[in-house]
Length: 297
Image (cartoon, rainbow, N blue to C red; front, side):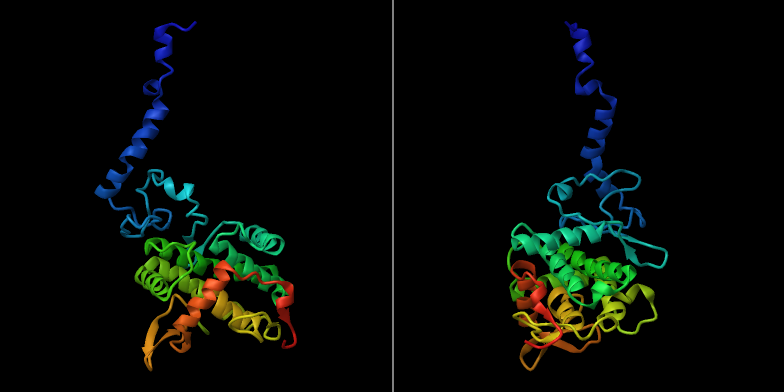
């Protein structure tokens, strides 16, 4: 039997590693308050609405490890985006596998176990597999996934910051709140615009879906399923209006109605239609192969 003196050495207070780690975790919030994160602290975004973004917006103080474990427990931080030398946000996440798995759940089980963001990914994957994107190069397929994921992640981060429940259908009010939060946050707005892209831009980081994919792959395959953009081209219209949305851009009042603008400052749709479309794609829509055709339904 171990003596009392021996047993004492098995306690937490005798474990230097435990003490150091416990001290790191318990003092992390205080260190954050006293010292704003360094500018290039992993180029990460503050995942908690109670954390005020400073400088780069990182949620930890370099060189310390992160103290926010709740975000991981709630699966908020699924992807990490880092800016490269040209300012383009990139992720090392295996989006191809993630999207493929989500799509299989959508096809086999109706997507009942998918989160709203994963359902967006699954529906976007359905477009990839059932249009000319399926025959595009691996480079273009990767660009499609990464571009859309940039905007998806920015929107859901803004949703968290705006205290909007991602599992509840959007209302016009919550849609506008998310959009305002996104556009008021320089980092999230940058991530979203890089994903959505701008027309004919000379800046590579802003090519995104709009300049790389929208009108360059397949304008013939139609979406023939129900809802917005029925009988319209899948890649240029369905993806743009229904799956991706135009949240990075303003909503304005014209003729007494709220109108969603696109990246060119032109009216894209009624704001209420944008809400309806996004709600469907996040919560109920399960795009099937039969929803795509070369002829109108």
